[in-house]
Length: 339
Image 1 (cartoon, rainbow, N blue to C red):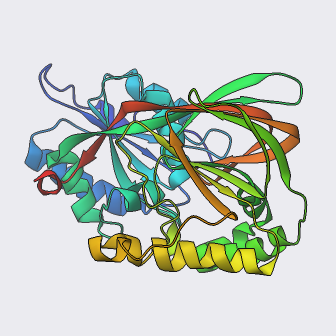
Image 2: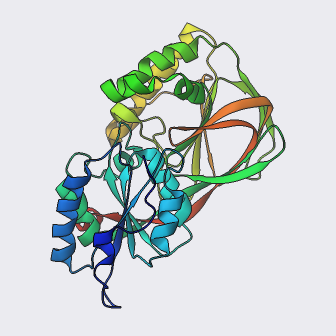
């Protein structure tokens, strides 16, 4: 697979007028039907009066940053991402400080950002039409600094969730071949393997100006969005544009605790929390499942632990510092969704 981080010949054959907007498509070649996308894009760009779209391919070595930087060098007005959550995250990381909108062509097993924004998942024509004719929506961006075992610190962004502990171990155990065949159900096997790991995270954390706390937990998930695959609502109070992060701490102690967690997430979050009447019947928070919310969150671990960002493994961390950038990213959404 090659990384064509330059416009295609077709894209460079026409020089648009200075006032004509031009889009770029950054696509993951193993996840999309490129000819089908090109056919729809060509029709929609012409109907909307945009110039010739530019095309940039990602690679296994570079899931989107290089392609996005090449697109930005062409002064595009919008970048359309055709790929999974990992591709979307990489593109957002490269473009969030630029005055350029991001449009989604959901692809892959997750599409969590698209799900949380309630965008159409399986309608290519509708997604492309929304990109060229829709409206801009400002959403929050999670920024995270990860400290490694050698004390090196690197900074990334995430749009959905960052996770340590059971969450990251589950991803490490996921069979990519099985995932390609049966989608999100491949995670079931990975969860079973992760649950066999009895090691807990030992950590200290600080939320905003609150005092530092020391706890043990199986999992820490920091969310910019609240919904997972299969319509599971992990964080019922999470909002993609409230300027805050929602953090969930899983601290189960045995079978009964896991049953409490399952009841809270599947029944109360997934069913009761979706209606005003249902919210009145929610039970009190249980010790095994704690929710906290704030703008800045710092966590220090007693040993290196695996970490994931938007469903991709990101090595091991000894500490993280993360915060929400309110309205840090512009997303194209269907015009009618803002009514």
